[in-house]
Amino acid sequence: MSDEAFYAALRHTYLTTVPQVGELGIELIRVDGAAAEARLPCKPEFLGDTERQLIHTGVVSTLVDSVAGLALLAHIAKRIRIATLDLRIDYLRPSRPGKDLICRAECYRLTGQIAFMRATVWQDDPAAPVAYSLGAFMVTMVPGNPSERTVLQ
Amino acid sequence: MNMEAARKLARERGDATALLRMVPYVGYLGLRMDLTIPTAPVLCLPFRPGLVGNPVLQAVHGGVIAGFLESAALMHLLLLLDEQRIPKSIDFSIDYLRSTHPEDSYASCAVERLGRRVAQVQIRCWQGDAAKPVALARAHFLLADDAPA
Image (cartoon, rainbow over all chains, first blue to last red; front, side, top):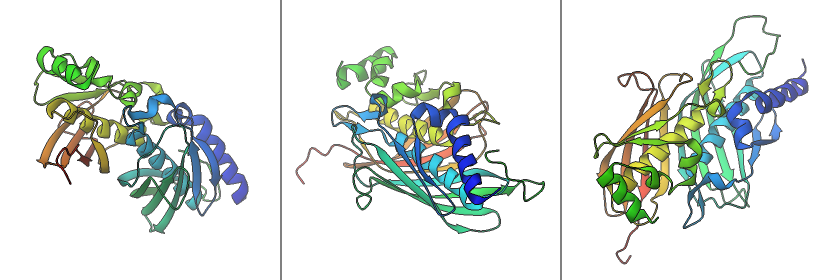
């Protein structure tokens, strides 16, 4: 399977088999070995503060965890299982309803068993992020033919 | 219903329905609040298939667990402090200790530091066995500061 075919299969599996991704309405913009980028259109039930009109930060966390996992699967592009070890998120600016949340995640260091991921979330301007996140993921190789590529485990 | 009335109902009658309704995302998750010990509420995230992040294990999405724990900390503060507005999240950090199962999740919180402007909250999450947490988290919240800067 070529890299392009793998990324296409990964996109399809992610969008069609992960219930929470479908329920929130996450849309993929880009998935390849360098990064994953996704968009989340806001829904009324995402609000955390109706008085100030702010999106709940839990929605941002879910988007970050999900897109970081996808970026890691694309980055490694082999039969693996992944598990989030930890995630830290700084909420740099308020997120407003009526605008999409856009998340870009990438792997900045990969060892044999651990992947270090970073993610940025913005609304209007990538240079003015609403959240910045770092996370560590556990990577487990799945035994079998290494040339055989199956996407989500 | 305003915040004060919702809080009063939760504190005096043990009915947190109105307080939970103050936050739409808490409603989306379907959170419940057990007020058996009024000063130590236990938040529950009822399992439903839409929250699954791993279709093979049917595990609750790790991001949903994060959102649940941020919500649990927020509801804990709304119940126990006298804030008139929703505290703002500054940052959040979570360690995932065990994989989750397709069942209800629970969370309890402790405010380890309460300043005039910032609250630090520790959050513990478990499923079947409270002695085996599936995740531990902490959060900082910015409180409404009525004093002049």
